[in-house]
Image (cartoon, rainbow, N blue to C red; front, top):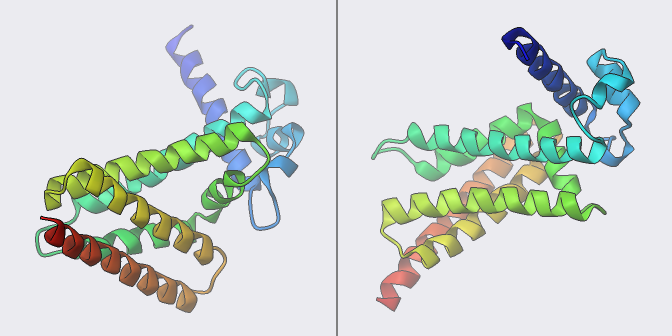
Length: 203
């Protein structure tokens, strides 16, 4: 396969993925989207779909994976901008909430398939959340000096709070987004300070 052909194949694959994300929204669940709709949105013949994905389930699992990767990359970049004087919780939550506000379809997918009928989708979302928890736990362990098990417990609580805040933020107005953001920041600070105090007592 020539380089140009490889690039064209990847470009077409990206068109299909982008089209599927575009069709998601407040009134559209992934299970209600058809292969023909995705192909039409991508400007392709339906038969072209099968050159890139076996079926809609494989495409859906790819979307879940892409969503998880995008969120993890976002939070890594947020952490990289943090200096010793920065408020890590505020920067992380504000970055996350603004991204969800501007890219709601990505979060619609994760939120809906997390509790949907497909076991494969539920497992995929659970796996992506675990990746987020693991990365955050590693960060907490490195910066706070916690034991791995303690860092993971704190990370799990924080990821649940942020994920739920993102779900509430979908389709809200800017003033409501600010309120939800501040609420999540306060909740995470409670978790962080509570963990710190709890571990001091344990020692």
